[in-house]
Structures are given as C-alpha cells and as structure tokens.
Length: 368
Image 1 (cartoon, rainbow, N blue to C red):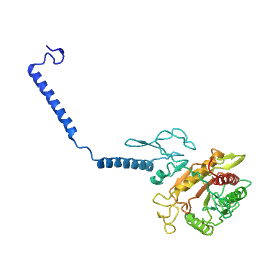
Image 2 (spheres, one colour):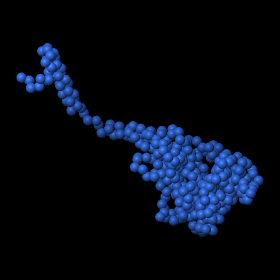
Image 3 (tube, rainbow, N blue to C red):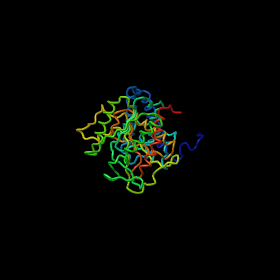
Image 4 (cartoon, rainbow, N blue to C red):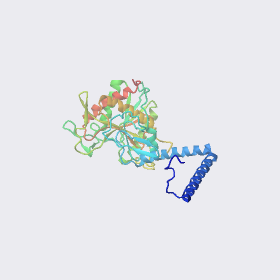
C-alpha cells in the first residue's frame, strides 16, 4: 500500500502511469549522460585561458580610452572613471569640484588639479593619472643664472586704470613694456633675486611679429639661444596674460596678506594629439624625438599650484593640460603661467609675483 497517496494521482490510468515512468527514466538517463559528458570533457588549455584574460584586459583598456576620448565634458578639477565589469562608467560631479580631490575608496582614476582639453591623447591622460608632485628639492640658487623668464606673447596687457594707462596696440595689448606682461616678468625677476638669491634672466626679445600665429617658433629660438649661452639654466617660465570677456571680470582676484592679487594658472603642453596648432609645418614639425617631458612639467606645476593654494584656496585655477607643445620640450622644468587676465589690473598681476617667487624659492626645500 502506498504511503503517499499523492505520489501518483488516483485518476491517472495504468497506461498513463507507464508513460510517465518511462519519461522519468528517460530524463534520468539523459541527465546521467550529460554529467558523464561534463566529467570527460578536456580542461581548457592554460594558453587559451591566458589569451582570454589578456583579451578582457585589453578590452577594458580600450573602453577606458574611448570613455576619455568621447566624454562630452571633462569635470573641472579631475577626471574620474569607475571601472565596472564589462565596461566603463563615467561619474558626473554631484557638487562643485574641490580644489584638491579627496581620497575615495572607489576604484577611480584621478588627475590632480587639472582640466584636460578634449583633444589630448587618452594615452597622455592615463599617464598623468596618479602623478604626484616631486618631493625632492630643486636647487635654483648659485652664482650662475638658473631661471629664464620670457614672453611668447609680449604685448599682452591688463585693464587700464587711472594709475595705469597706455597706448593700445590691440584689444588689451600694448607695446609699452612698462604696462604689459614684460613689466610683470621684470617684477618676478627682481623678487627672485632680491628676496631669495635666485639669479633669473629676463628675455626682452619680441616674438609676436610678423605673425602671432608663429610666435612660438620664435620664442623657441630665444629659449635655445639662452640655453646654449647659459648652460646653468634649469627653469624656463613663459609668462602670459589670459583673455576673458571685456567686462564682468573686474572682481576676479584674491586678497593675500592685504594685497589684491590676480589669480594664476599653469598650462602643460603634451604634444600628443596628432596635430599642432602652434607651429607652421615648415618651421617646427612635430616629431616623436622632440616632445615635451609633460610628466615632469606637470608634476612641477602641481607642486607649485599646491604651494600657492596654501597661501589662499582660490589663488590658482586648475592646471590646463593641452595637446600643443608650447616649447616645453626644451627642459623638464618648463612652465607656462597665465598671470591673471584682461579683467585684472597691472598692479594685481605684479602683486601675484610676490607669491609666485616665494613658491618657486620653496622648490629648493624638501617638502615638510
């Protein structure tokens, strides 16, 4: 007698029972066969497994580069990529970016204090990830000149005031060296020597004429000429003034130690985009053997930016990473600095030099 009356419904006929039993036996036989097949299947060769793993890693790397290449807007301050299984997701900023990204437990790629132009090679972006400012001292003191200050765009000037007027040669431009970026460079040179004993040279060569579009080719000649004449030169500073709309920027300055100071920004050239906008091909063609050491220049810019931010948290704009060279292939200590903009005054720009000189002098000291 059956203990479980519900095992086979009482209304099922004998022939249906036989059919059901046969089906169960067939299913069991099939399951045993598949299990045996699994047991006798040969394991995947180690070489094939390795190839699969390498292919997956390559696909992830390509996904990261494509995400960087095709991202519509790069977050100011950093580029963050969160690696996910099967792809890459770019995380938008939920709040205004901090000057220095805070550490996070998420697997992100972080570029310190930088805004990256869209046409910069993804290869460069990946190399910049995780670069830290160099902690060793950069010795700039000595009996020989170690710093060259020059101006690729030598007529860039500032907003005129009753105390600072000039004859314009263009929109916020003048050939009067007492009222353009040359005056700012002269103040930096003076402070480096008088306050910190650093010998700096200040090039007075003009580079904009005959065409401003080829100015970088002429300033490159200036740099190489000085480097040949003064082999002791370590640092090259191309001092510029940035450009903004004609009005509405008059209040864009910081007050440090009671002085109104123009905000500043470093530009790092990578030479990595497959094109060059600063040289005519006949003047200075791009070659893989004459490229900027952008990693070293970027690390230097980061260190100076962090030092200047310690004087005032709004003193510096984010480092601008661009695809051009900007003559930064001449040395591993090349800086292009934008000192304020045409909404600032000459006095504000000159005041900023007191703190830039202090930050440069601090490079000779080990980080605390």
